[in-house]
Length: 310
Image 1 (cartoon, helix red, strand yellow):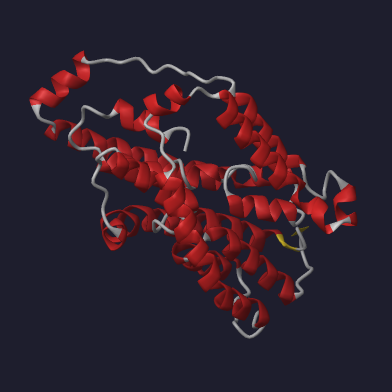
Image 2 (tube, helix red, strand yellow):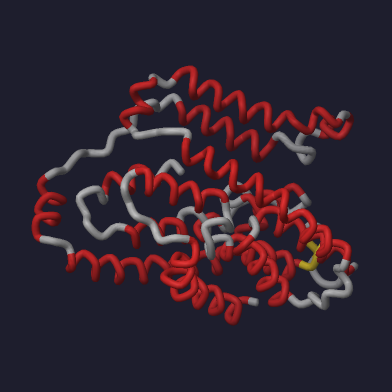
């Protein structure tokens, strides 16, 4: 969300820029966040369930293959559309250069505060949190405090100059509130019927967690399949976060990658779409996003990763 507005400004003179936003969703908002628990919410939930922070570096090869292929495809697609740009747009792009500058640098401190809160204000580091139910909200209180400091100390003109509005955040909040409420019965069913579903192998966890992450939200989906894996009672081999390592890898990779398959697979997807449309970039609708981008670009790469790695 920090990068989307600069990317839009960089490509402002371009006529063809929808493809850039689509690949932004695929790479920046999803697949690029596979390496640490702070990169994508499903990984953070696995971290809270006992996976060591450094364990996620074991996913480096999957991260490299997926993002390397996506960047290569983007380069080819962008080169194609660049050749189709009107001459006037190219001249404007070359001549009208407005250097990117950063204002409101104090916000990097608040951002660091958010990251530290997410990483360390939990039971793994603060044992006293277990003593009182209300202590569990220390992390959320700290994050809200960082947000308040940002609003308090950032000049309003800075946000206006950056075309910041609350509308994309409101849209995402309304949408995902509805998703979280309506998905509860489905997730409860999965947890209670773990043994009868026949999902026992890593590639099954990969595709099933990926499928649900595509159309629900990848964070509660990852938690549900972790619970499902716990329900299998498998304790052979290397155990991480209470389940076999290969299954945990499948859940993490499937949830993170497939969260990019639709606008509602991951919160930032819809927010990036809303910010782009707010800046007069006509994004494809829900199903058009799938058959024009995710099914033909993302899905084949995800299948390749599964064949090679799981």
